[in-house]
Length: 90
Image (cartoon, rainbow, N blue to C red; front, side, top):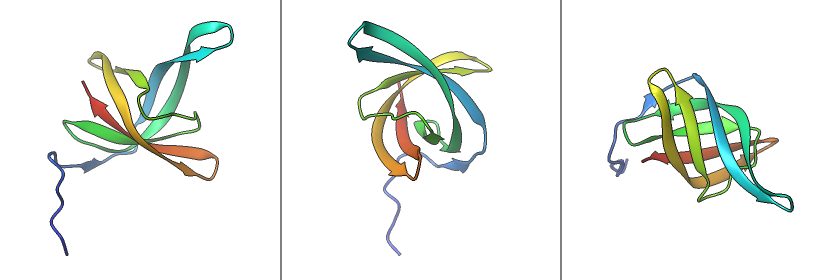
């Protein structure tokens, strides 16, 4: 098998996360508060599943036990009625 080229070691997770994402619609910019499930986490980011249609470039404000941190959506795959997204920490 090939070597995994990732910079950070991934750790399996099943933690529910709460996050907000700014979205521009016809009425202007608004923050959408929603949730997801962390599938794996690392010091560089996470892979999450959510029912919200995330897009690459979205910046999430993720609420955690140590405060709020920001992460950028790098990639998204649709999985039935959910979205699997890779997010990179700032």
